[in-house]
Amino acid sequence: MMMVSTRLLPMPLVSLLCSVLLTGCGNGTLSQMDLPVNQNTSFTVGDYGHGIDPLVHQYMQEKQVSGMVVAIIQNNGPVEFHCYGITDDKHRYPVTPDTLFALGSLSKGVTAEVTTLLVNEGKLKWTDTLETLLPANTPLSEDARRISLLQLVTHTSGLPRQPMDLLTLENLLSYFRSGENFYSRLDEDSVLSYLDDFSAPTSAAPQYSNLGYALVGYILHRRTGETIEALAQRMIFTPLKMTHSSFTPDVLPAYAYRALGHAGDQPTFIPRGELTPDWVFHQNMIGAASLYSSARDLSTYARAHFTSTGVPPLDKAFKDVTHTYYYRQKEAANIAWVSDRYADRNIIWQVGYIGGYSSYIGFDNVNQNAVVVLQNSFNWSNYIGHSILTRLAVKTEGKRK
Image 1: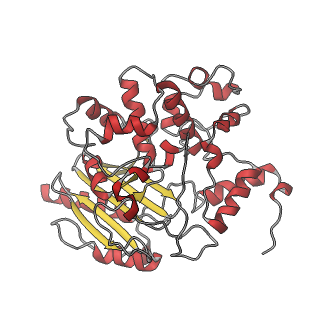
Image 2: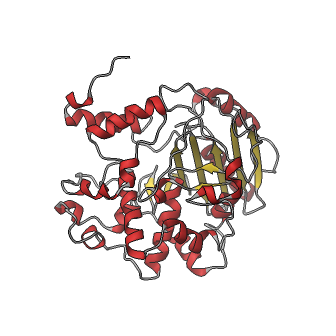
C-alpha cells in the first residue's frame, strides 16, 4: 500500500482527518448508543432471568466478540451477572464477574471524583485556572491561562481531543496497522507545550478532550505529590472494597487471567477478532485511561452513586458529579459523566475505549437501576448498556402506575 507523507498535507486537513478518524462515527458523539434498526432484537430485562441473551448473542456474533460480561442492578436489588464467552482463544479462561478488563476512558470518572473529593476538602478549587495550577514558567496563551479546573473535568475547556498536528496523524495511521498506543505524547510533561498557542473555540459546547484529562493528571500529581493510583485507592477503592480495581493493574492477582483485547471496529487494518496490544501509560495519562476493573467492582461503584456508602465525603462527591454544567438532551456535560434525558428521567453514563476493549457504565438514580457492560473488543457501537438501562426504566415506571 502506497503511503502519502502527512508532512505534505495542510494543517487544517490534518485537523479534519484526526477529528473524523478518532470519533469513530465522525459525528462527535462518544458512542453509538441507540439500538440500530437492523439489530432491533427482542429482549426483556428484570426478574433476574436471561432475557438479554438474544441481544448479547447477536451482538457478539455480528461483532465477533469472544468475551463479554453484563451486570444489572434493578431497583437497588442484588446484582445480576451475565457472563459470555472467554478471555481469548489462547488461554480460554471463562469470563466471570471478577474477570479484569481495561476500561479506557471510564478511568476519567474515578479521576474526576478524586478531584471532586480534593475540592471538597479545600485542597483545590473549581475556579483554579491553569495560570495558577501549572508551573509559573509554563508558556500559556491568554485563552489557556483562563481554563479552569472545572472546565477540564467537564470537557468544556475547548481543548481538542488530542493535538491536531502531523505527528498525531502519523501515529494514528501507524495505530491502524499495529494497534499500538498513539497517545504516548500526552503521557509526557511536554504536553504543556500545546498550550502556548491555544485559541478557545467560539462555542462553549462540551468537546471531549484526552488532552484536558492529561492536564488533570499532571495537576493532581503536582498538587498532592501522590499518584492517581494512591489517591484512588485511599479515597474510593478501599472504602468501597473494590479489590479488583487498579490504575496499575499488574499488581492485581487476577491480572494474569484478564480478558485480552481484540480488534473490532478498530484498528482498521487488523482483522476483526485478532489480539491487539494493551496500552500502557506511565505519567499524565494514567488517570485518563489506565484503569482495569471487573463487573463486580464496577457494579458496587455504580450503586454507590445512588445509595449511601456510609462515607459522607464520598456520598457528597458522588452526588456532586451528577450535576449538569452544560445542558442538552443528549450528552449533557457533568463532571466526567454525561447524561441523556428521556421523558421524565435522566440516564447518567460513561463509555471507554482503549486498545482492544470497550466498556460502558450507566445508572438511573431515580429508579436506582444500573448497568455495566465490558467487552474484549474495540467497537464504537456500544448500545447494549443503554438499551438495557432505558428498558429497565420503562419497566420500573410501569410497575408504579
